[in-house]
Amino acid sequence: MKKIAAVVATLVTVGSLSVGSVASAAPLPAQPHPWDKRIKCQAKDPQGRKIVTRYGNADFGWRHFTGRHNIKKCGTIGAIVNEHPESDDHHGRLTYGGVEFETGVPRPRMVKIVVIVQYSRKTKDQKYDAGSGQTIGVINAFCKNQPANKCPAWAKL
Image 1: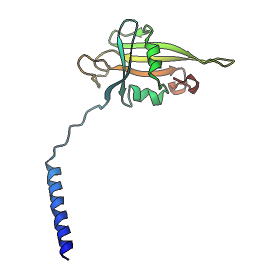
Image 2 (image 1 turned 30 degrees about the vertical axis):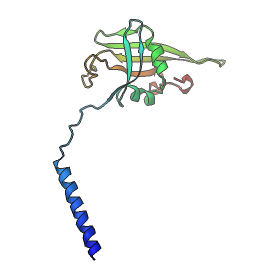
Image 3 (image 1 turned 120 degrees about the vertical axis):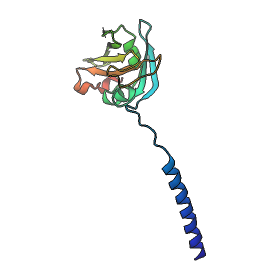
Image 4 (image 1 turned 45 degrees about the vertical axis):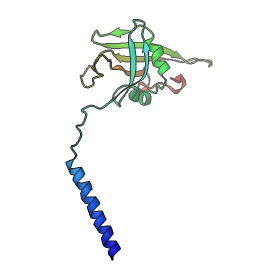
């Protein structure tokens, strides 16, 4: 009986200590649009712009296009941005394009790859901020004119 009383007294003491510490802890403020700013890979375009690919989140960046659009290699992004941009809206949005050919088959196929870059500190909708002196980088990469803009498996991107 004494052992049970000692155990109960210990549990009550520990419980009251933990309740007191939880009640006094202030909750952390939530980020309105959390994303991973770390850089996965980077490349330079012919104008000398440093184009970064950040991990991002489900909306943009590496985490967006690796699953949704089947582009899984930094070299693919680097090869595409190594060319001059196809379009520039003069507000930081650059669009690069390239082509991937299937080789070693009697009837080779081809697919057009598009890389969209936000070369400014904030995204167009102002939701995300890369920080002072930084750029958002690659927003999206996908294969054009494919179902769901997903690159085919043969492309091995």
